[in-house]
Image (cartoon, rainbow, N blue to C red; front, side, top):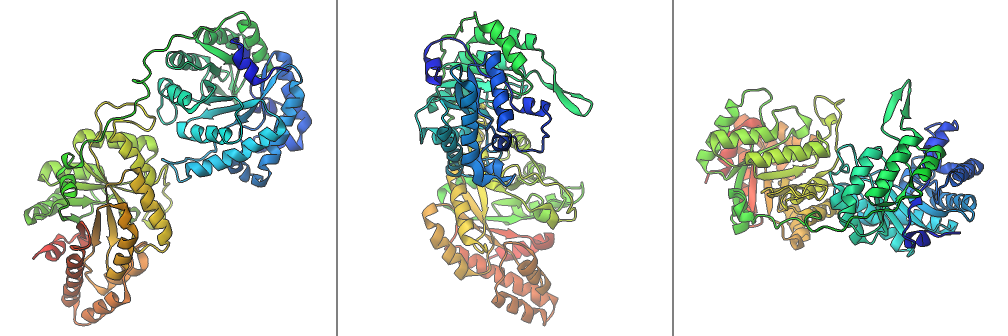
Length: 609
């Protein structure tokens, strides 16, 4: 019985099997069934499909465990069965392989985003993968195939989970789209050297595209890696036929392309979605007499771009310069208009510029309100008024691709200062049924912008010149779950945050406790200052705005002032804000004063000597 290690060492071309899901669907298994659980429920069916692939010429069988990780199994109530399902799958493949094939434990993505663009940590992902690895090892696999990964960092977590338990060979395969890049935009010429540096024994591509796209990816890999290359294309791209998606590439077509893929440098070939034993048999006939031609390596350093040092903070913007020099910063927050006329907003900003504020903060649809876009508003303000902006940018309304496009455009247009926020959910606003995206959160967005500042996109591809953003984040000293807030701030700082702006400060004792807890972060913090205009305004903030705490002492002051009239209430609100501003001057690196209800003169009253 050949082992995967022996197949790696002999220098010849070897065949994987084809699709398991396609075969199961063809046998009448509905798509709403957990295909991984069939290792327990219908073992004879799984074993027989493996045997069909062996009879077709497959030399490496993949276990039926692509989605058998605890995250995906939990969706079917099977998370606790992770090890058992994987062990059974390996035993079934082992029995079918006999003395004719090696067995590779198949591991696919978790189906979630991990850091730096998701909430799941690398350590958590590694632990999930390790449970799958343990079960496959118990079942007797010869090695592992990590396949259909879009995120290099998630594949790294899977590879580390394998290496933490065994030194068996690992085949590492990414998946690319019709543009030849992964979901994060990483080209084979970039991820190939990265996988090699991780210690993968075989590097390849599978799924998502047909033979033509996989051939192009193999050609790129052959130029930049020295490890053996693998390739498992789909049987073309699926077409809608009635109410089904059918893969149309014939066995002969797949076989002829497999020959070209081997000639381009691949040593391990097979099939992915849509392929059957007939496809594998045809591939075997085409490649059995072909020797792999692995091209000599070219300079890989230019592909695996490490990025460049960010532009010094002081050179990115006037705001960044003040942060770098430790000077106290004053800004005022005004919301963009609800309509299409920016003139009133310009008038407000001219008044702020005349008063000497350092910048204007432009929120991005706070409380899920529909207003003029923050990026365009900030750009118009800077060009029309000549006052720098701190543009808030929320994750709520855009996916990762849209954010990348927005940010590159903003950088080219000259915007420099960003406050990165997750964004309020639509249910808070006037369109509660609107769809939120939340593709990533503020932590992931901070990672994205910090990477752009090093001249890299999310896929580690070089962009040319780096962006020059000053990266800010939000923080709430009054968060109900302060431990979680502190953890998230730590991750934001680790991701590249260069300053933070707080929610409105009304409780100095609470602020002092918070500052002691974040002192080690060494992060410039700007305090939010909100002048209350009435008792109703104070009660609204205290009870209906998430993340804002208004102490009873402040409410009592506003209540007493309101009894004396509206003007007295406004004067008391301004007095409270001035007290907070005076207090934070010795505690913080700046103040962001809000213009309540768009009333800029009120904000200027707070800032006046």
